[in-house]
Length: 141
Image 1: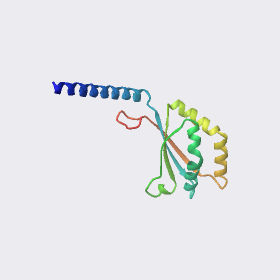
Image 2: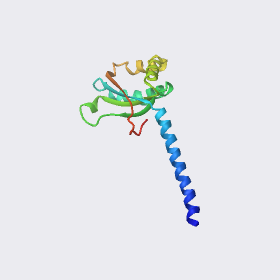
Image 3: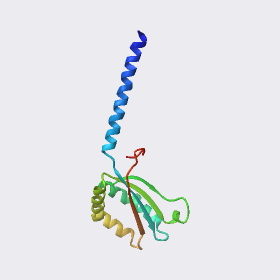
Image 4: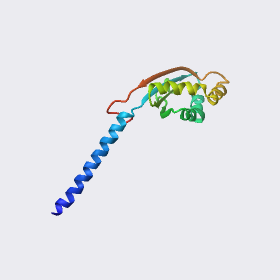
């Protein structure tokens, strides 16, 4: 009898946890974001200026325009370690990403920050952008 009183609540709890897991998974499936992997190559000696611009200004402006920062990285190995910044953004969709970038580039604060940071010359010489879909086994969705 005692076993039944303990087992029934334990089974109910287990089933409830399973149901919550299914609901969370279904929500994650329906709200999958698109990720954008961006790689910036800087002019010689300008990587620190780019990192400062991101740290002090760019990320806050991204946030205002719905661009979610996932992470910012610099390569460990030369020669890329001297002139490369890699980062990942998340957007609700590819269409929203296009809209976010248009709003960002038109932002008066961004235009002012960019002009001021490039007063002594351009910072970025090349940009690569790749849009990515998370796999079904990805921790990020």
